Length: 276
Image (cartoon, rainbow, N blue to C red; front, side, top):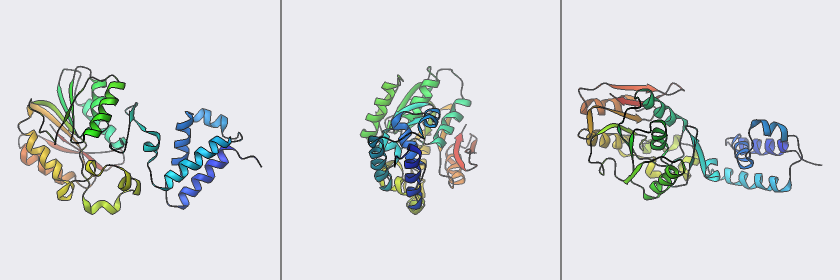
């Protein structure tokens, strides 16, 4: 008996959920591979599935059972409405980080500014800021050469003129900056068990973990930005949901004259610390 698209995908989705995995991932992947939007899906879902498409779903299902993130299978993720190439050398850009970019833009106008993004990964933060604020002079830093290659490719494709430098935190920066922004590694080894299997297995450890209960890179950013931030400059940081107070304290100790505030993400979790 002929099988329809919706039957095959529903079965695959249930199979994933029974195994304790994200059921929607298989539909997300398939629609992306077919380049179908929701309307096209509604038009095709009851049609008989082709053998080639069924084989494609089977193959993707096997990969998802291995906990490979869908974004790595596709090779891209959207961030701030731009499409970014992702590889296993870069973290997958997340919606919470879009909130960091949005907050930075909401607190700064179009006037020319010097901006540095620490730990750029795919370049998502740096590129999104540059495209939204063409007058800004944006420098993107990463300690990983592989990540920098991906970020440069993304910037070129999206026509964002950005300066890329290999740098351990701010070591490669010599000029004072108006904005320092970062989504640094902030997961502590003790949080390993709380993490999604796919993140633990496939995303780059260097971009995830930090010593000292996940606070080591914040301490380094605070120490190094002391002499590199303009008097009126601002710092925007993404944090782990349990780190608000600790990160606030680290920066308040260094920047005694500035206001250091904790901001929540859309889910109501502490997610950003702003020095202004």
